Amino acid sequence: MVQLRIQNLGNRAIESENTERKVIELIHENGIDWMHACGKKGRCTTCKMSVVEGQENLSSETVQEQHFRDLKRLLPNERLACQAHLLQGILTIRVPDSSKFPHLTYTE
Ligand code: FES
Image (tube, rainbow, N blue to C red; front, side):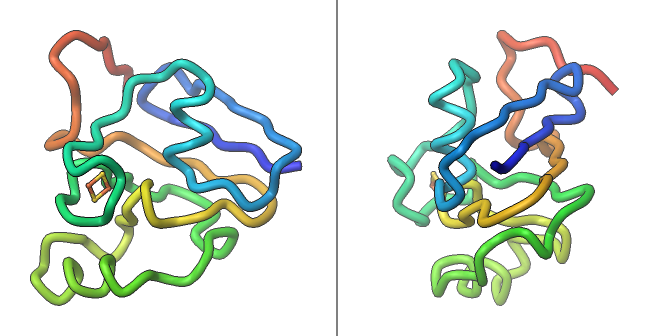
């Protein structure tokens, strides 16, 4: 069992028995809009998430994430939701300002 919490979307919580899903798949399967301009291929960074807690519960960084980290397009606490798998435990994230949709209401 894994749990994902999205802090600035009203602390929305998602639970799943599937322990090797990409974070963006957990989000989309639960009907939550999340940017993914390149079609979840690791080429754009619009799907990035700010990790508040549980970084250690994610899979290792992919080559695509390392590429964007080298370009300083990913902060130390940011991961690509289309690349990182939630392997265990609880992950608490936030939607970064640059990846917010205008039609959604975000909380603090
Ligand atoms: S959707 Fe483009 S990098 Fe994740």
